Amino acid sequence: MVDHPDSILIVDFGSQVTQLIARRVREAGVYSEIAPFTSAEAAFARMKPKGVILSGGPASVVDEGSPRIPQAILDAGLPMLGICYGQQALTAQLGGTVEKGNSGEFGKAFVEVSDSCGLFNGLWAEGDTHQVWMSHGDKVIELAPGFRAVASSPGAPYAIIADDARRIYAMQFHPEVVHTPDGGKLIANFARHVVGLTGDWTMAEFRQTKIQEIRAQVGKGRVICGLSGGVDSAVAAVLIHEAIGEQLTCVFVDHGLMRSGEADQVVSLFRGHYNIPLVHVDASTLFLSGLAGVTDPEAKRKFIGKTFIDVFEAEAKKIGGAEFLAQGTLYPDVIESVSFTGGPSVTIKSHHNVGGLPERMDMKLVEPLRELFKDEVRDLGRELGLPDVFVGRHPFPGPGLAIRIPGEVTRERCDILRKADAIYLEEIRNAGLYDAIWQAFAVLLPVRTVGVMGDGRTYDSVLALRAVTSTDGMTAEVFGFPGDFLPRVATRIVNEVKGVNRVTYDYTSKPPGTIEWE
Ligand SMILES: Nc1ncnc2c1ncn2[C@@H]1O[C@H](COP(=O)(O)OP(=O)(O)OP(=O)(O)O)[C@@H](O)[C@H]1O
Ligand SMILES: O=c1[nH]c(=O)c2[nH+]cn([C@@H]3O[C@H](COP(=O)(O)O)[C@@H](O)[C@H]3O)c2[nH]1
Ligand SMILES: NC(=O)CC[C@H](N)C(=O)O
Ligand SMILES: [Mg+2]
Image 1 (cartoon, rainbow, N blue to C red):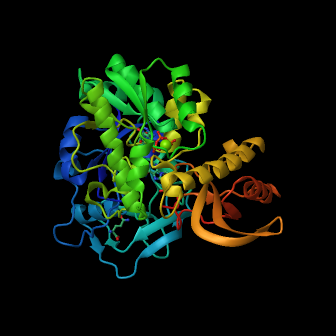
Image 2: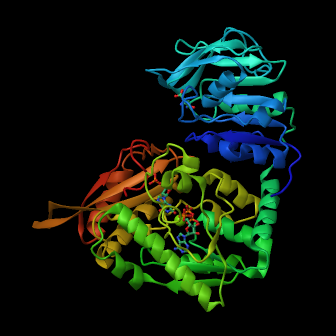
Image 3: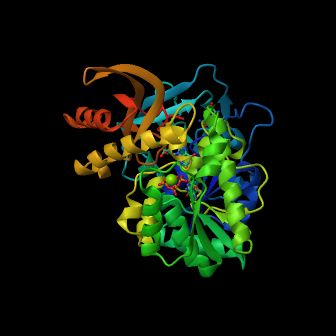
């Protein structure tokens, strides 16, 4: 770990959105680290932060044995910001009262500002009304000594509370989510004006921090990096190469589930730009034969995750052994795959590189991007000088076409999907829409319908097209194509791709849908 003289410690009580707090702090140009409440005291002693943020969490402070703020942190006299559970814990531990709710408030709410305080610093003023996002059952009913209410909502009389003398602020709502439009600014105000940090921490520093961490973790060991051609692994590879140079070998696995022409493209693009050793493995038979008869989405993902590791281990042997496996794992891969810090988060899908990993692995993981969101990785990519062909690419999931073919995956169905997907993406590029879309792809459905072509009857598969906008893949909106774009693509696909006789468009946002179909 690297010492940062100006940092904020985020104590995690298990909220689904704790990483978003870190992200807002980073956006304010301040270095932060998250520590679960169980090890927060040690992190506090090591980091010597200038301020502390307390996250939300699923527990109820009223319950016996529920998480507490470590006493050493409370006694340190530093500025603190409590969010939801954090507010409740502060109140309970400093002498106020929290009541267990039986109904709660979930979703959008409006708070009215009743007084000024150090946290607002010109941002919010008395009499203002602001939209916020609530998600709580319990609430503060009596303030701890020294606090006063500075904003309230119909459901939360103590929506924001302040103790300017001790520089402690707390709120019932979640400022870190986008549904609290001014939330990022409130967190920035805390970091800069209340804590008094200058906000000069940048991606350039993140790069330096990570380089030192990678060196410390890897030592003289050898590292294999799974390289997919996607932005995450390209950024991870270039960063790791900067840290340890020749100790790194990249491995691109062609699992037979790539898009049209992608394997060759990735390899030549990477070799064209970087002088980093890259092994190209054709493992398509291994993957496709193992997928035969597998139809359950999680079973597909777990098989692919495990087989990736088998291939990486075999390649490691060939270069004389490697102690470490590097991957471009991002935060959304982690939060959707596993329950984080013992929190309430459920497994949505096992991303092949996290929840799909086998239980026993010989290599240790190096994942320098694990706290970042996609758009931050792109920023880091630009910082590292990666060309736009890498930085601007749409994400493509590690399990590839396998999770875009609900039902059994066969070579034949992969070929059909590849052709249709290539037409769709070609039309998107020609229409100049590629950069306006976050991710676009086709899904080959296990449904056959009747059609008529050239006076003959067809009985073929249905294809679904999907295109979404997003900033980080955690939520997504459907992309609205202009005018006749979709009918034109549908006609081309049905005419040119044998095996598809009907095309539909997916109008589901995330949530409630996910971006991929499996
Ligand atoms: N075909 C592949 N060969 C080797 N490694 C892979 C392959 N596909 C995925 N990986 C590994 O799994 C990680 C996660 O995949 P993921 O698709 O999330 O990231 P990415 O491909 O690097 O970027 P993007 O999300 O933009 O597609 C990658 O960063 C990479 O380390
Ligand atoms: O590397 C990956 N391994 C996976 O197993 C995986 N599953 C989904 N994705 C990508 O993650 C983003 C969010 O997708 P979902 O809304 O479908 O979860 C989207 O960009 C998806 O393409 C994956 N990436
Ligand atoms: N989002 C939260 O932090 C919730 C806190 C607490 N579990 C409540 O329901 O009030
Ligand atoms: Mg990918």
